[in-house]
Image (cartoon, rainbow, N blue to C red; front, side):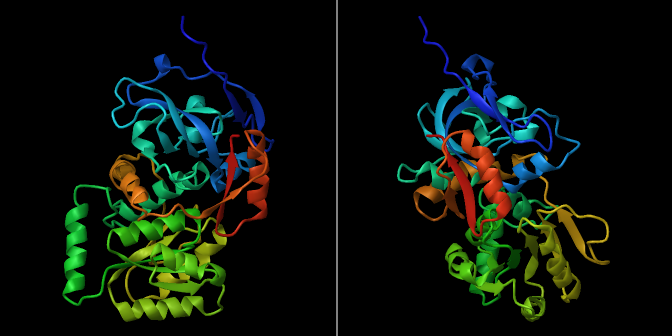
Length: 361
């Protein structure tokens, strides 16, 4: 006689402008999975600005009630018949599809259905609360840096041309030519921390912005030059540096999670002599982009282009300690789903170079 399925609970967003409500929800048994899906028992959740936005702002693509949440870490307890890279009890992090994947795939529940393509094994020495800061930031950064419609850089694992592109970058450096470079605005943020590391891993030089208190951590990620975004002359300083580099800078990635960062980034793009493309995590409202500047919001409508980052690059880089789980977690004392709404409230008040994390137990 088979043992009964575990119970499952979720933090539901019943409608916009209301707090989360914790309610029972079906446990996803193996019989309900597609061949490439698996079930993760969550040990830690991380909270993202996107979750807060969808609690406070109505979006046409979100149908309430909904289970939000993208960043999860835990152990595999069920898997589909076609899953090949994992086994039960593996310690993993995963990118849950939140609002777009249906209730079973929302991250803020105790057992989450994910596709194996957006799952990575983490080393035994890495606590869940550290690994869980990565998924959404990693995926967003990989989209922005590697896709042709954005910055088109050779992010590790992002496509068949990566090795050739990296070799060309390395050969140019050996010939005494300056490396290709990218400016990452908001390098200490979740997305920014991943963008710095992915670009450096591809052999691209990173120029970055952060507050002075975060300079050392951003340099530890691999940035070669960091500007204080609070300086009154930061725009002029960056424009001067980029103009001195000529055409080696491929563009700007605005990775900071607040709209005010768009103004200095657009000013830089409009003042430099070279034609720099701007990729941004923020929605571009009318009038924000100056005439003559090319800019686009990063939106990963499909993840095929970045799956190699998850399957090929990240597990090895973490195990070899070549990739850091940043920003550092800000772990709440409240455990379980009851801590998720509290985490929202903490994030709304603001945290610097940290990511709000809730442990399941």
